[in-house]
Length: 210
Image (cartoon, rainbow, N blue to C red; front, side, top):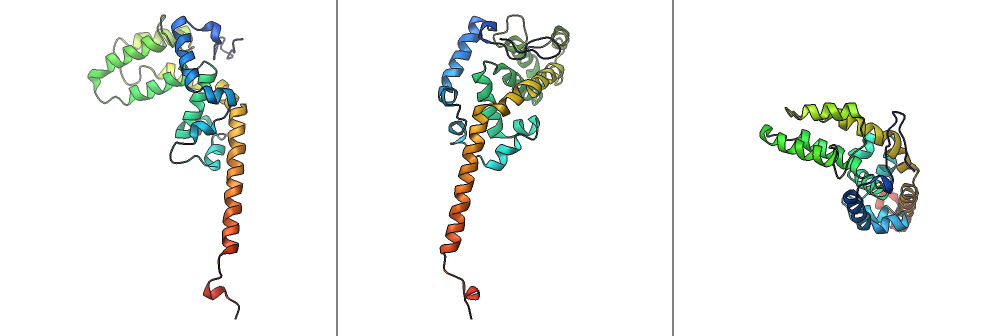
């Protein structure tokens, strides 16, 4: 079943909406995070990333979509969630635009812009994102003289789509709830061990009764 944003075009298309090439790629991505998809367990994805994810950081993701994306763990978890929904192209396009805007050499912009357009926006794009025709046409026109801002409108559209649709569903997902629960238990155990260690240590000289 397609999920629609108020403007009238789908946000996260189902498997039936994908081309053969895109479907094959999505299946490979899904296989890479198969454990997460089967267990809805994000902790396994974040476990070996340093610095280690804390409960405070995980809860901070609820505050705003911007804070989720600004967190390395948050971005990693959100991308894994999108892979599970076959809509990873949204965050991939957003990040490709961020990388493009940081291009320092103006001579490299035309080729990079063309690659991004052909992969995410063109009519035969293998990872086509869901943007309206007006935005698509404006972006295509911008490519005639590529600048750092030529994808800004399309990137903004995709950001809003993720913020309004995918981000709330990520926060409601079993994967995110399980991660919060696991980190809460871990934090409680660490606090209990700390209290036990403090209680077991010998008193300092100035703490001894006189």
